[in-house]
Image (spheres, rainbow, N blue to C red):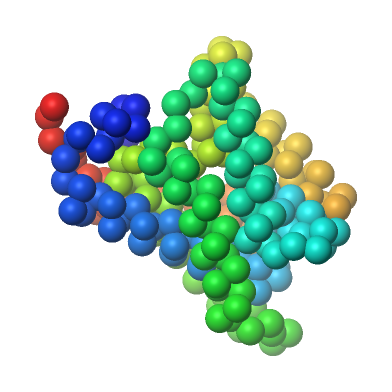
Length: 208
């Protein structure tokens, strides 16, 4: 994937495909997270944190997601990370799409329906992640934090990612976020799913 700066990303061409793909990927990402929330069988670590905060603050889940994303993006400054257009769009669009999804998808206590929401949410999240990453407009704020810390510390990306997500997961759980089989399923499946779908979504950039 590209490490171009924001202006280079725009000059890299194929905007007629890349911009709609970015938008579609981010919207689908938020909608798939709403499915996981409604499934109520466990969330990814950062969303466990958002849910814990949501249960304690009088604002929507999507608003919490936007605020957390913006705060994470501020941590890029001392790490000298460069946000792309996709990074900035990620902060805003995913949160709005989560709130839209929660409005569209009713709450349910029926276990088969919740399992279906979990499975569909994880798979569609993999499609969505590959779609917006493949548009080549930069990483999301949380991914950029992980790569920046890995670069500055000299530690492996796997170690940094695991450490951050464990801390976030524990804090979210203590705040009342849902940890369960969905958390484990997401952790095991999301990497392979994104890698699988990237073969169709990665856009080859035009040489500058």
